Amino acid sequence: MLRRLSALAFAVTQMSASGGNGTLLQRANRFAPVATNPYEGQPAAEKAGAKLLQYHCSACHGRDAKGMGKAPPLVAPEVRNASPGALKWVLRNGSLTTGMPSFSKLPEEQRWQIIAFLQRLNRPPGPSSPSCN
Image (cartoon, rainbow, N blue to C red; front, side):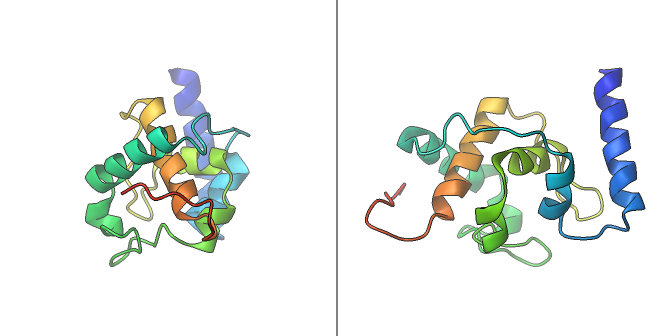
């Protein structure tokens, strides 16, 4: 536990020391471990992620995930190009400076399901893009 807190404190310090250059996802890429989403491309996980996103994220990011107020859109090139590890890092750690809450209390499986849905939402449209509705 102390090791995790120390690592998080170091990451926050480094982000602050860097002057906050870049967006939250750009900064997260510097600290996020390389990770592969175990649920990427799985329709059942994407559907579960859609429900979780509506429940936990829509108040700030909108029901359509296109952003509201200070909360950025989740359907955006930056999210599409983000690594799974960076998305996971943002969900787990949040950001005091941007107002993004930490979702560390969600089980890891549910965080990955949200990421699976975000990956599906951000896929370029095409015949192989299934609907989760």
